[in-house]
Image 1: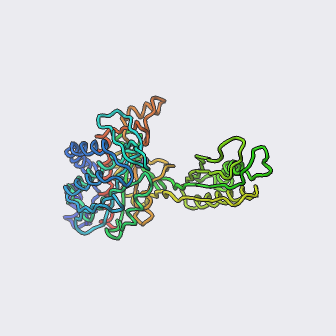
Image 2: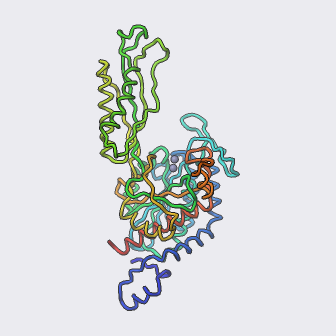
Image 3: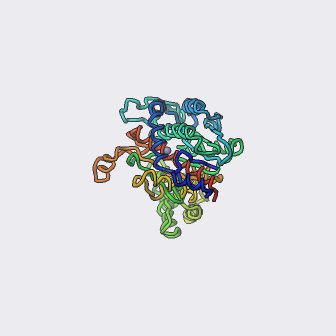
Length: 444
Ligand SMILES: [Zn+2]
Ligand SMILES: [Zn+2]
C-alpha cells in the first residue's frame, strides 16, 4: 500500500482516524514543490553531467563511455547496475519493498553529424562511422534525456517513503538506428530483469521549455524501408525495341505506387510512401540493365501498414510484368513500429501532470517520425511517451508569429536551454512514475 503520508490533507488524516478508507489523492502541488526543491539542489551535478555528455557524444552501439558515466551515477544513488545489456545498454534496479515495477527509459546515442551551435560545451568529437571519420553531436537531445533520467532516479530515491515497488531505469543504445531496444530485449531485458508493470520515456523538441505534451493512443509512426531493384535488358538508347527499359519501369512505379495511397488506403488514415532515391544507368544513350528505387513508408495503424506493403509489392510486380521484364527484387525492411500510449497509464499520469503543469501541458497529434520505444510496448509494457520543450518561451512565440525559426532536433544548431529543460524533465517524469505507483497501490 502506498502512503503519501507527508502530503496527506488534514481531512484525509481525520478520515483514517475515523476508519474510513484513506484514499488520499496525491497532493500534487506540494509534491511538485518538494521535487523542484530536490532538483534545484541536485542541479549543479546534473548540469555538469549534461555538459560532459554533450561535449563527448557517442553514436549507436559505441556509447561505452556514456554508459559508464551513467552507471557510476546510478550506483552512487544506490541502484544495482548491470552493464552491457544489448551491447552498450544499462539496466539499473532499485528495490523498495513490495509493489509494481515501473520502467523509465533513456537513450544513450548521438548522431553522426557536426554540431554548429558554438556553445562553450559544444562537441568537437569525431568517430569512425562506416569506415569514415565522422563528427558526432547530441543533436537529438538524448543528453537532456540522460540528465533528466539520472535526476529522476535521484529524486525518486529521495522520496522513497512515498512509494513501494521496484524502479527499473534502462539506458538504451542505438535509438537513432532503431536497433537498441530490440538489442536489449534480445539480451533478456524482460527475462533477466523484472518485466515492468508500466513504462515511461520522454523526448525533447523545439517547443517552449516548461511545457509537456503527450498523445493518447498512437504517438509516432510505423517506419519501413523500401528497396526495389527493377531488372531489364540493357542496350542502345536509339534502339529501345531491343531492350527492356528498367528506368521506364522504375519511373512508372514511382508514379503508380502513389495510387496505393490515394485509391487503396482509407483517406482518413495516415500513410505516406516517399521515394528518396533512384539509381540506374550511366549515360543518356545507354539503357541500363537495372534500376534501384529506395524509399520510406510511414503509417500509424498496423492494418494500414499491411495494406500499403501489399500494394507496393503488387505495383512493383505489375509494372515489371507490363514491360515483360523479369520480376523485381523487392526488399521491404521492417523498421520501428508506432508507439502506442496506454490509455490507463496516460489517464493516471495526466491527472497528476495536469494538476502540476496547468496550461503548460497539452495533447498533440501523433508524430510522423519514428521511435523504437515501441519495442517495449509491443513486448507488453503499458506505457506513456511524452515530450518536453527546450527553448525560451519568447523565442517560440516569436517563431510562431513568423520570426526566426527554431532549430529542430537533428539540426546542427539544435541547442536546448539546459536548466529549465532538465528540471521540467525530472519533475514531469518523477510525477508520472509516482502516479503509476499510486494507481497500482490503489488497485483498479
Ligand atoms: Zn533523433
Ligand atoms: Zn531522439
